[in-house]
Length: 452
Ligand code: FAD
Image 1: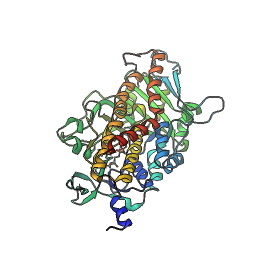
Image 2: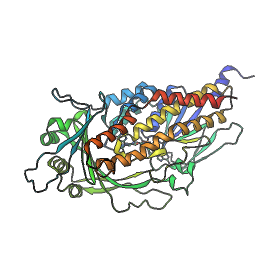
Image 3: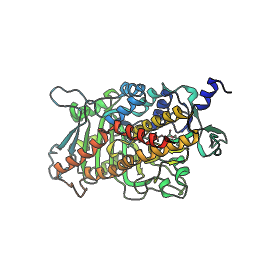
Image 4: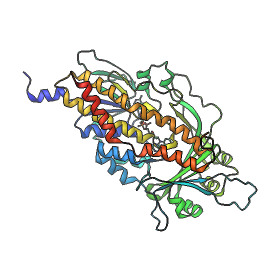
């Protein structure tokens, strides 16, 4: 007969996470916190993030707190709140008419404030991606991560409770009781779950492009003034929009200029996804915003000579019909790559992480009663059922909210009250997510399923 220690070891779950991006990292931290064994396989030689901003909304921060308070601490260590300015209310998102109605107005009348939306206390704080990554990585023990491991495929170890066999590009293999694909927009795990010939296995071009840059704040402040420079603003107009917010302790302004991408953006062959970025120049951005108002044109003038143009891809055209196959599941962009117009792609991935950690903790706590494989499969089916509607709504609403910003959504056009009502409704659905409701749904799904 087994001694108690061996029994505990056998019961213990071992999870493989594919991809060490933000969702993979946060999921790993949540699992470790729950005493679940985890190994993360990252294709790169080290953790990498781009030099650009990311902001988190209230729902993301609350889910982080439930996953592991250290995640919130990491965000707080690098987050830049909107500037505290005595006589003006902060923590608001502001939409300005960035488009210059009357090009003959050579005085360059300043843009008009169209509407504002309260985002909650420290509601939408910008982080420098690389800085956030550095903070998060401090909490990941080095033996949890294997670098240079590009996931190729995995297979079931048979139905007698054997772990799954995971294969990597370098010919090496690993075992795990469940595989979580956090391998981002070009996910290879998604191809395994949905099939290589399924268009839903690949992201598609949204026909928007983004020019991204970080601009030194001292230059910005001279041109925009302190208030605009240090608080989030969104400049909107036909066919384009330009949000900006401070990051890196207010030393840098994160600028994203969205424009139409009329031509196709080729992905290479159907089974691979080519480069989603291409070199661009400030002149190209200036062409997009020619004739816009003075704020936008002066921000564009501050951009570096050379910057990157990002093709915005998402899963809108071909949504995943499921996030799960057996003991393999998808989370974050791998499951639901979204255009970034709600600024919530990473945030909704944090919700996925919480759902998975909660369910896998249930599995680990129950495997003395039920078979481990079957328990994992049940948990993942519940995850899929609970998470898919909301995360796919984000993909859809992100496209629609872009149309609202760009004055072409049929229901809102240039009626600012209607725009505000629509943006408020959608933002609140994201920000004031009923996390307890999600947990209760997961809980009752588990209770139903675990019944003999
Ligand atoms: P990624 O960050 O893409 O990580 C995937 C990881 O998997 C990478 O490290 C990759 O190397 C690895 N990988 C890939 N394939 C394999 C493989 N086969 N084997 C092993 N490893 C592999 N979201 C917000 O919440 N707020 C914002 O303000 C915001 N702004 C945005 C602005 C823009 C312009 C864009 C494009 C997106 C924005 N987003 C924002 C969305 C956010 O960036 C993504 O949702 C988030 O980065 C997804 O994280 P992830 O961990 O799922 O994927």
